[in-house]
Every structure is written in structure tokens, then in C-alpha cells.
Length: 230
Image (tube, rainbow, N blue to C red; front, side, top):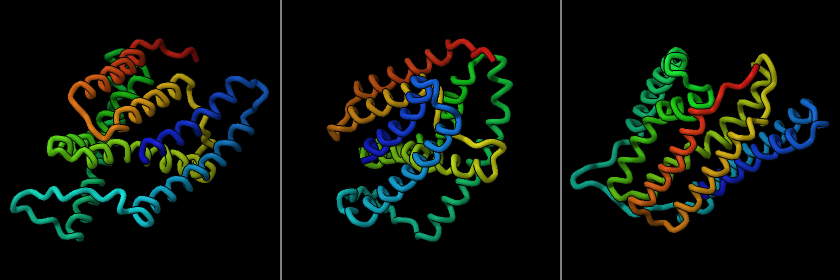
């Protein structure tokens, strides 16, 4: 399901970029109108996906019990309070990091694409990756994949479309979904890779090696990418 949602989001990102690149007559007004419509559709798809997984077909997403010996589950109030506190701390750390990473990028001659796709993504998703690693070590592949793909689906289907809509209210200029074509192609390849890896429901260490190689190919390409001419 998560891979399918990611593929849907990739299609929504691919269409404005493909049309804007192939058809020079497609102006900014067309791209903005299309982006608003696509943003509404993606938010609706995200909401329906939540309804599908949490309400109408929740039994399909129920996993086996993996409770640790002698470990009792946290009370709901404590778990929510801890989640809220950690969320605030992670947001503060991410804000400080984003402000300071620009100097490091200049010192190490890193391109903006490399900083955005690799550096910021790694640090910003450190907490999620730690939870996914912990789940994988406990043989909770369902939890690990759910965290990894679920966060990506949330950004692509909810956060990005909401930012598009909010840009018409609080932003200096309207935001659209037309991105750099190379970035969209990488997102499409990453989505197809995630689909192939998770399709069988099983994994092994060499599958992880293949996924890491795809990631390193992206990282090398973005690091060596020459700066765009202004």
C-alpha cells in the first residue's frame, strides 16, 4: 500500500515537470492551477489511505505480537506526551541544523541538490531511521518498512500538497509541483526500487546492499552535479 501511494505521488510530481518541459506553451499559470488540483487530489488520496488502513481494512495491517519478555506497553497518555516532546525537540534540532548546514556545504563544495537530497534528508530523518533499524533488528519487518515508506508517503501525499495550498495564503509567491526533472526521475527510480524490494515480504542482507548501491548512485550523481547557472 505504501509503495502504491508513493507511486501515485511520483505520478503527480512527474506530470507537471513533463508537461512544463515538453510543452513550452504551458505557462506558469497553467502549472500553478494544475499543482493546486493535484495537491487536493493527493491530500484526498492520503486521507482515504488512512481510512483504509486504520478503519475499513485494519485487519490487513495487523501484525503479530512481538512483546519483549517482561515489557509492558506504555500507557496511551505517556506515549502521546513522549511523542509530542520528541517531535518538538527534533523540530528544534532540525531548524538549527538547516541554518548551519549552508556554511558546511560551501566549505565542502557540496551542491544544493546534494545538501537537500542527502545531507538534510539523513539528519532530518535520523529518528525515523533509528526506529526502523530497531524494528528490523527485532525481525519486525512490517514495522520497519511501515516507518520507512510511511514517512515518505506522508511527505509526498500530505506535507508537500499542504505547502502548495498554504503558499497562496502565507507564502511570498505561490508554490507549484514542477520540480527539476532529474529529481523527479530519481524519485521515480527510488519508488520502483522500494516496490521491488518490499513486494515479496521477505528480505536478506544482499537486498540491502542493492538498495544502498542505488542510494550511493544518487548521492554520487548529486555530489558531482555542477552548479546551475543563474
